Amino acid sequence: MAPKYLMRIVREPKPGKTFELMDAVIEQRQRMGITAGVTTVSVAAPRMLIISSTPYESLSELQSRIDGIFDDDEARAGWDSVGALAKSTVNNLSRIVEPPDGIENANYIQRFVFQHDPTSRRQLVAALQEMRAQGDGPKIGITQSTSGGAVVASRAVGSLAELESHMDRLRDDPSTILRAASVLAHCTSWSSGIAKVVSRP
Image 1 (cartoon, rainbow, N blue to C red):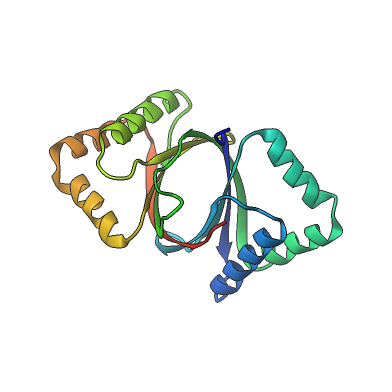
Image 2: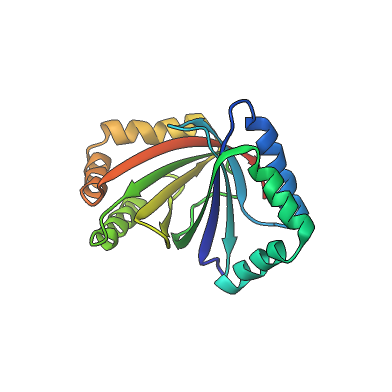
């Protein structure tokens, strides 16, 4: 069964703790037996972030993982130990609208985060789906947050050179520019960042 949900745990490392936190996150996921998803570290973004993304087929599957943490003293201590290296931690549960192409082999992920008012989500998602259908190369993934007004589009690529070609089209190709304008017409603000994949899962 295809995953319906994506849990993103977004951690901002304390100054000087980026790689220590990265290693701790990877080790924690291994201890928890997580076998799907990716962990990324920002390389070009407004903030340095370490993001672990884990897909789930159902909320029941997610509940089993959460209960496994809350019911185990060692797991809770491990969670706190990782959190102590972070300036902030945000758990964001999203519904998967479209999965990204090539996530299994990606070395980099570009994420666009779109904020919108409550009445514009459907139109924003539809505009992103049209952009996904008409775009060249690996198809973007689309998720919508269950806890706020955010829609995320993710592009998984093998290299920064591959990503550069997509950025050039956004700047120079009239049809791509038009589709991008349609997306932006349905959001109140947006941000983007590029991250390196450092672990699977």
